[in-house]
Length: 212
Image (tube, rainbow, N blue to C red; front, side, top):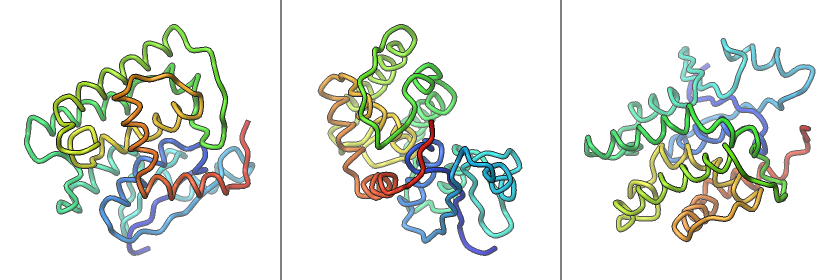
């Protein structure tokens, strides 16, 4: 197989798939998508044909296979340096990596209680660990925007991998009507109205499958 191929799950539900898809879009490089609907009898076998972990996303670049969303994005940052997927200065780049890693490995309560479901609109009671996760995300967004907000609508001025990693959270906040401060509200709006994100949302809304 030649060229870049991204193996993803349902666009409505798969937050892990959304992140590298957005980063690939930011590179401007052409790529092929293999979409495998989740929670189907054939899902495990179909994903297993591409992924050693049996999970999506997976990036294929010729003979190379990468099966972790953050590793995929780091690979793309190195493969396409002109896309400037991380901030250029070391200190800002370190901060961007820190908040991205925090999203990659944390916020379990929010993930479980407010799963990504782009088509859904539902109010849910939010308290305890979920509220704490939301507070922390708002802190991150406000802190980044306070320093870098004069350089554009994104967390670190230019659109970066950090923004792609928080994009699924923006969809969750809209899905479940989470109340936010003005800075976070504006960031969610910027994330959801970005051209690539509008493309993903339209595809998610057109999907026939329903899970749960």
